[in-house]
Length: 496
Picture 1 (cartoon, one colour):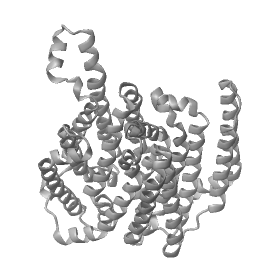
Picture 2 (picture 1 turned 90 degrees about the vertical axis):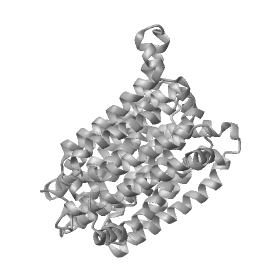
Picture 3 (picture 1 turned 180 degrees about the horizontal axis):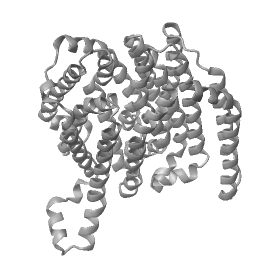
Picture 4 (picture 1 turned 60 degrees about the vertical axis):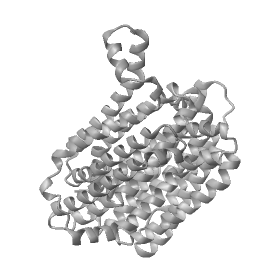
């Protein structure tokens, strides 16, 4: 089968639940930013930044190791059982340690009196970590329907619980105070919990997902093979460093921002605005996340083919084109896109183009990372991420005190651009791929010029601005199509 068609098909299969699910989940952001003040939403932004960091730590590269060894071992069940048992054991240890020090951790995070936040997130993390390998096994076995079903249930249940606690319960209590159902709700619901109901909803959805994945687990296979585990850990520990450094690049700004803002009375407000505007890059983020779901097993599967490098170059080429189209589609209609968040959050609009480009560079880096995963030079990949983390940390400390959340955005862009360039230069030495840099740069410049012209528009009539921006978007599409017509036909027919 044409490998590009296979990747496109897998991206569509895994992308349907991911895109629709994430879209539905992201639709909670308009709710949050209209119900909660920026400083309240800042709590959500910070706590989920810590969760992202801890999730990478607690999975310690085992998902990628599972894909790698499941494709090599004759008995996939043994690889599955070894990986899953390892994650279960470490998750239980994590729960004991976190619950034992919950009060101390809450104080250190600045949330004294909210020990429950720490406990809830410990349970969320444990459930999500244990679910990782069953999810990966569904992808490996191409059980797309089962994968999509569980994903949808997870997303819909999370949305349902959010709507119940944040919308339905307050509405019923205020409009039908004397009813039987209001009396019942009054015993279970407390308005004082506030943003905590976002965390409770996540916890209930994660536990439900774990229950739904139980049929995928054969408890007879939960006997780790010590020698296999040693091999998997040897392969995955550099990926842990890689992942930890990567998550520092992704979340450090939201963890440190409130500590670096000179005006502490404004710190949580800026954190809330930055976190909400970060979500505005939804389409770029969704595309990259969806692509990664399909791309990682696809890259390993294609490695043995003679034309693998051509396939990798072609997928990168069209990945960049799609990302640039998404960038323009958001920025040319940014006035409408910013309606996604509440009015008090829209002053952060200037971070959106910076974060969009940053995410695109991160996606390019994910494509480039195939070289160190296929050559087992994961240590080098880890060093690249560590170098990026150093850039992130240094620039955040330098820029945030002066520029606020804009400094965090620029630090993110600089970090991902640096990692992308470094990975390309080193990768060409160990696993050279003939990427089409000339056309990639040409399309990037064209997209930036169009955005720049649009941002300089002096027209006050929104209808005319929309018309002109639409014409420029179409012009970009025509320009790309004219340049890519023959190549696209070749890629569809031959696979590269």
